[in-house]
Length: 165
Image (cartoon, rainbow, N blue to C red; front, side, top):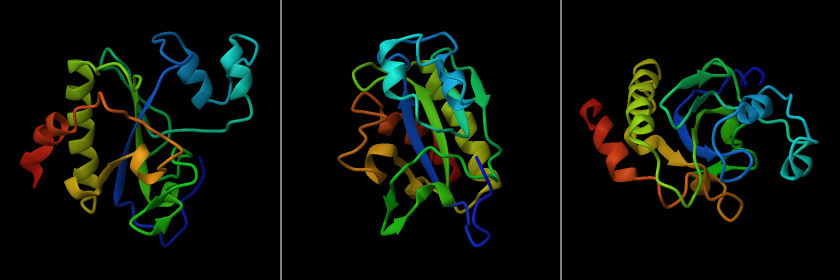
């Protein structure tokens, strides 16, 4: 994390998913990754991602537990090489929410409820983030990322926050 460029208005919300190791849930591996403390020897996959320095603003675990890693007014390193509507470097102007999950598994009811609550709070403090300015990691990094994947129910999620528009 670091400071956003001074001219950057936060006006995009990016939904991600993560599991560490891939397809497994629970444990402290995600925390360790976002805190740059992941033990590369603990699992063969971790050696592949050892050099990554990533962060997100918020993680929502499968239980619905919410953990904030980066203050919303600061830049997290969640989007990587990205572009939204012709605007590159999405980390500069976005907030990233990670859902503990995988492309081939449904998300939990607890996660949708927690995501609704967090989204409404974010939209309250950042009114430039509207339903139209909520997107997936896959959409801003096409061909490179797939998350949150086909099992994420966009209609369900957007219907939960529609009262704000």
